[in-house]
Length: 156
Image (cartoon, rainbow, N blue to C red; front, side, top):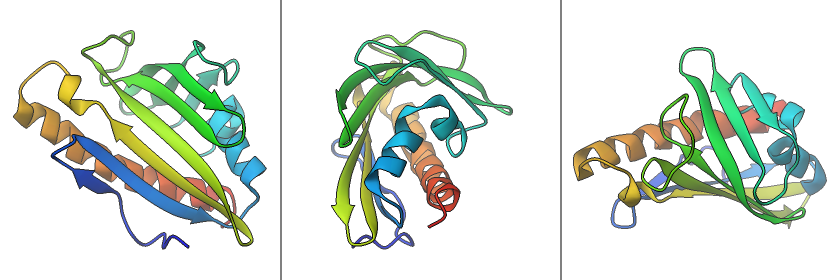
């Protein structure tokens, strides 16, 4: 079982960041928190827009202090996997050189669920390696904050 005290881990060789948390609630409730507007807005930023969790659907995540970040859903396996690409800058559409991929994978656990998030694709972002690594480490901190908020929002 994952220890929620463990923070996100950066893999600089593969330009990715990951974290696994245990959520003391049924997997279907975690799935709803990942894939519905109200669910997402309860833990990930201040606002969320997502009409449905379907490949090709666009949406946005908003933070009062940072702006709105566009995303496009790239993979869905109902109840198990939800993935999207999101723009690294607010107010712009997702494109090949300005977005990373975020993958959420759910698994059953005793009295709850295990959620693993992996954000990858930092190596494809425009700019130099120093700026990519800075964003990578910044997002590591973001996943620590946001996944802790998810665990709290679901009453774990």
